[in-house]
Length: 188
Image: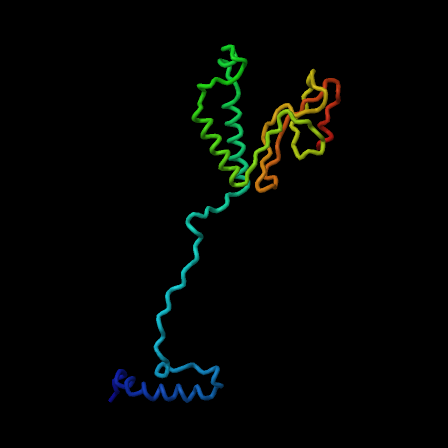
């Protein structure tokens, strides 16, 4: 007659524990596995907390995104300050009218100030003297009748700096005195 396995397991349990403990005696004490009967109950440890960044900390956006944002704000500022055909015809000296989007200009200044607080600086190069050693991309040289030396005639894209390092090189058109040769081959 076959014995019931469940009842055998109950009888075997004390002997299995004794066998297991005896088997552990073959090994040095530091390598022995402690038995359940001799272990004190383990206190429940709190689950490890994942340290998260403070909620007010904002991840740093990539340089290319900041440079693009700064360029777009710079272009918007140029559009808001340049006179329209209506302003030129009105006889106020070509200046932009005072009623032209004062709220937009105020918000633009606030956005530029926020960028400045984040360490982003925008450099417009219009009117500055051009030297071949400047870190600028020259898109074209334009002969100009009243120019006495090479100057930046127009900034197409400003230089943008983040914490003192250049993240976007400016692109400019250089005005040169008439009669001088094209320096486009020097830049390349």
